[in-house]
Amino acid sequence: MSGSMFYTGLSGLGVARTALMTTAHNTANVYTPGYSRQVAEMATSGAISSGSGYIGSGANVTTISRSYDRYLTAQLSSAQSASAALATNGTQINRIDTLLADKTSGIAPLMQSFFTSIQGVANTPADPAARQQMISSAQALANKFRSTDQYLSDLNTSVNEQISGSVEQINTYATKIASLNQQISQATAMASGQPPNDLLDQRDLLVSQLSQVVDVKVLQQDNGKYNVFIATGQSLVVGDYASQMAAVNSSADPTRKAVALVGFSGATSELDDTTLKGGVLGGLMTFRRETLIPTQNSIGRLAMSVSDAVNAQHKLGVDLNGALGQNFFNQAVPGVINNAKNTGNLEFGATLTDASKLTTSDYDVSVTNVAGTLTYSVTRLSDKTSMGSFTTFPITFDGVSINATSGTAQAGDSFLVQPTRTGARDLDVLVRDPAKVAAASPVISGNTAGNKGSGALGAAAVDASYPATPLAGPVTLTFDAATGSLSGFPATSAVTVTLADGSSTTYAAGAPVPYTAGAKMSFGGLTVSMTGAPAQGDTFTIKNNTSGVSDGGNALLMGALQRKTTMANGTATFNGAYSQLVSDVGNRAMAVKVAATTQDSVTGQIKTSQQAISGVVQDEETANLLMFQQMYQANAR
Image (tube, rainbow, N blue to C red; front, side):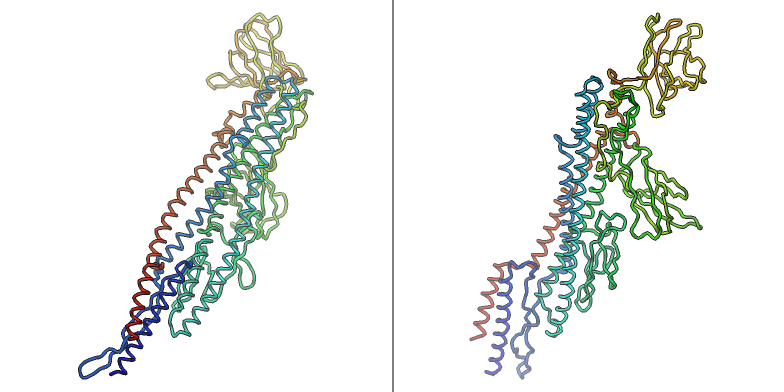
């Protein structure tokens, strides 16, 4: 009997000792990241049968278990991944938001200064200082466009570097998880199936840290090993094996880093950016796709629209030397990038056809073979809208035209068209000589001295069809009171008369034109209008402007471009388009901030629930320590 009591007490001592060691282990790891509270699971030893019944023989510890809920742990990893993505995206967006919202030295105030300086030339066209101020304001605006583009390009470089860093982290975590899979399997086998809790915690911590880099899915095998998947199900860790990932230049756009899986042979398989979600990596991809690229394209579109409109109007004017104006700004051209995986050797050239139709999107051109004919399908990437399929060149869409310059495509080839990406980078001022500012109208119109009626011929306006030498000589219009018409228009040009209600009539070249006060008369790229009541024989002249010293008519039209809706298919002004960009980025920054706050709250709640199960509570462990000490002392007696 004494022997039985001895062994019973000895078993109690063993249980108490194990429980004390477990409690001490918990206390020591109260602040260890990822540690789960451990519990010594106790059970009675087998009872011994006797004539008076079964007599207990003490207790034993069946296992040391973790206070662990794998579903809560998985939820926490997913929530932390979403929080990290929003935090990263928000931080990057704020950098652009701060740049665009600059009200003192940003693009908007410099653009206003440029158009104000044009108005100054219109007011005092003979003043060299006003002309120089226009050129200086244009250079300041161009410099700002270029510096803004450089900032965004540097931001793209920073994103590339962060993507490379994230990929290195993923590889490190994957390797460690695979190693722990192996260690856990070996330790479990050596302990006859008992779980190596500390190793399990380390593995879960690594998965948690990995999920803050990129969203992952974990599947536990029957043998307890973790399989970890990324993106759309690509294997990152399978048992003891860890795949490797690489940051590579995107095959579609070499200026961007993409993420690729590395195969056994070393070949890389590029992942679609949209499949990488969650974590820092997902946040970077989202920022680049939804904010950085559209912003750089928007700034480029604005620069190209301003330069295109100013150039077109400047070329319709006359400088101080009497010569027609040339391009005031350097005009960027759309870019086309061949996919690195193309097997054909086709080269595209792109031109701008209509700046008002430009969007802020890039475009994909994919080549397929349809019934033996190469077909080029164009997709607008911002909204995945098909722009059509084409079998002949040129291909025109959204203000851009692309044409084959050399080589031949193969089915499966693709091309990335970037209509506005370099618009801001390539903007520069070409006119540096104040005398070459084409501020004057190319033609001068007026009334002949001695006219008896009240008819007054207004200033002539010219359009893009105005030829290099529109008038062989002065045009003299004579009013015939008997027929109520004007004659003397050039014999080589038909005349179109447009009334106030918008209706128009075209008269043959050389034919008299009925006079209507206020009506617009257009011929040979010129438009004039007359008001008042001319008398019989009154004459009016239109002639070439041979020196633009005191005429600011064309500068006045250039200044008016600021208020014209020349962008977004004729729905937005320059300032309106820029304000829309600033608003879009600001709203996105606010939306991400609100989403991040909400997600952080959700993450905090899940973490609280998870810690309520797995976390170590010092007061509870202290109470357990006293309890197991008493148990130890009692069994020792």
